[in-house]
Image 1 (cartoon, rainbow, N blue to C red):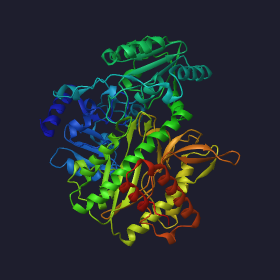
Image 2 (image 1 turned 30 degrees about the vertical axis):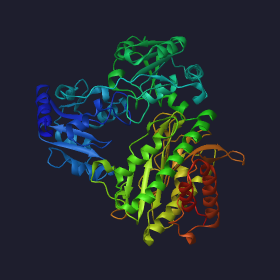
Image 3 (image 1 turned 120 degrees about the horizontal axis):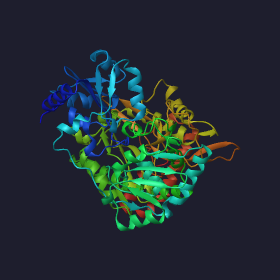
Image 4 (image 1 turned 135 degrees about the horizontal axis):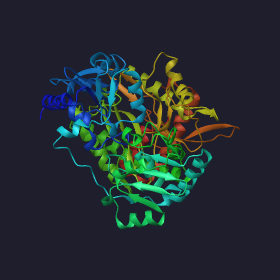
Length: 585
């Protein structure tokens, strides 16, 4: 069916159920960042393939809302479709659209199984007297060739990688529950379930998780999952650890049977409406960020040491890639997709590599000015022996999850490119050398990073950094290194990115990213950052006069450490490239 035919079939179902507007969010029952093909309902109904957005269909109109990362892509993909693009932050939001399009007491439909309780409450509050109905999965009724859900097998992540066994973690969780007088904790977030049970799988691309729900009480743990996903080894592991296993869909009956005298803790941003509505009305609800989310944001010493191994492997792969790239660009036969695929080949050569941690951003020249550019959705640019090339990529290894961005010179640069690169480097060094008192949040580090840019009237329109999971999601909360942080104080063992950028539409884009962890500083009550990654930062675009001596010293020292750590595992040509890119300034 064409997009027009899908929308018309949806409208027929809406008419049958007297629904005036239908919302299709970008979501699954667990509010995952990346979606399995089965749950790409918004993409199915609208044709827009970006990773974020909301579609709303009425009997006469259809709109697609997305953010600035995808304006250009959405405009192109929505051509010749019934959908109008609404730019978030510029046009009316979809709540205002609903208030204009839906009559008083009219029905607004949405699938409650993929709607978070938090978003449900927000919509309900804002639409006034209109009725939000959540028992309407209309997309399933028209998506006749819907892809099947992956049924990957679970595997056990050995304690030698995590530093904490399942029993260690569940005892810690129960201690917090006891302190907060919680009888049951509901966990809907897939990465939290994988973390708690030390299990992994591959149900979602680039994120080693599996579809399941979990509930933990003061004396029992429950896992709700399709049995075919469990082999004998995993079943035995769960039995030995006294985990009761039920079918994935039994979670609704289980929640309904929790006695009304009990207290249930849940995260409204990671709990879907269908699960919540199964709870008896007299059950006491305690809401907040998942307790397991707060646990996993602090990495163990063991996890941090393994992450260093993973980033070392990634640094080897990227050095080999950049050496290959610099030689190959002269042929005029390398485009952005070819380059991205070659980088994946180098990662696959590394021991313990599982898969990428997100879709690689391989961007040359003007394309790098789009922070979330995807060369697979356009005609990829051919790289030339001039200008800047940006690659933002990462991998999932048995040692951990990586995320690295480097921008390198491919030849002659303009003065503007050099200046912007140097400003980005100053911002990056500011972040890497940041010290802060205990109790400071990510907004403090974000301000430190932006200060060198603010001084010359420049800025970048994204956060400075995000948490990184351990063989889990490459974007991990709840802390955020941004102006919009949620107030979580930075603590020892937190792992996150420092990635300032400069973007000039139609010309060039620059981003430099290292992943760091928080540790004690020498000064009392102060914390500082240490890099998990040692991969040279290209010094060729630097305007030396723009750097202070302490910045030059830091950059030279970082590159020297990177060179010494990598040279023994590279061939002669690769070592020569390494020397060139990390040349002391």
